[in-house]
Image (tube, rainbow, N blue to C red):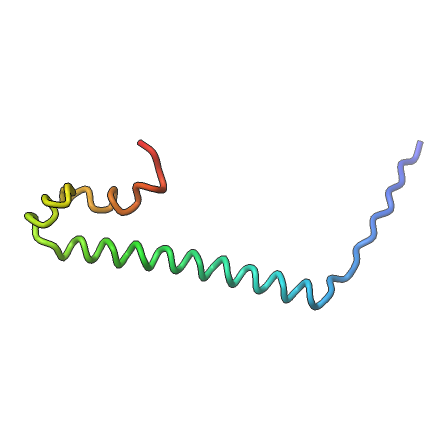
Length: 74
């Protein structure tokens, strides 16, 4: 018994290609912006004195945990 499948592939339209490229660019830009913002926040907290961090309730060795606390749950 023979099994036959007909699959046809259509050529993507230029508009769909551009839409996909724009979506990929936007996703990459959002990811970069998020990383850059968190990096700036870490640098700003590291520049503070221990007393300033204590007033904020953050230990120096927990700065990264404080900045990224919304990304994980422990």
